[in-house]
Length: 230
Image 1 (cartoon, helix red, strand yellow):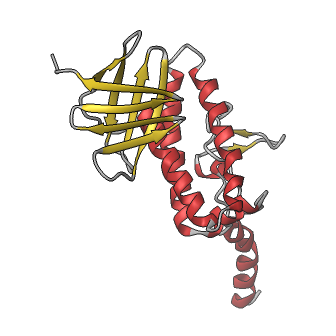
Image 2 (cartoon, one colour; image 1 turned 180 degrees about the horizontal axis):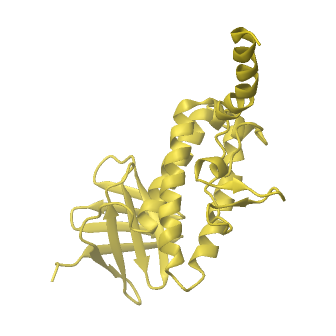
Image 3 (cartoon, one colour; image 1 turned 180 degrees about the vertical axis):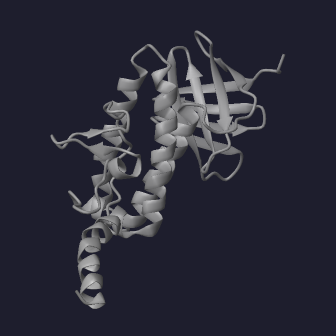
């Protein structure tokens, strides 16, 4: 057989492999070392069911407009990949907690993904999605202590009865604070303010001016002062 014929046969045999390698599939299942079983269900390299992923978008077959926008925008794709890494770290922390933290995190993440469709109503959907990703990443970093933090401050709030708020500030982008009041924990992000540092989120506003803080805790107004560090 002529040499040219051998080359043609070899190229034909190689084409399926090249097509598979060049597939534009940004699905998290493909990107995290998972494989597909004969039943179509993903498993990891050890044959175990994989943990839930951050968004589970599949760019070869986008399921909706949000997935299409994320897949077609390089900036959003990078944020999606960043979220996947941070979410995986948070899942690792949640697995060590026996109080149903992992299931709670999964439910919370599913609600966040579902909320992304609201950005389609925004004047700039791409910017809205980018902001949503950035806030979610910093929220996970603060909630699971995945970013450097400052020494926590304890604020004594005047009232009847008085209460305390433990504030831990994280060096995220944007800056984030974890506020603990009794058995309640909220994550707030730094926003715009004329003076001082103003953090908002989850129905709470925490406005710091020097040692004092004006707090609106889900409709309850509080005046608080940070206590000296022991």
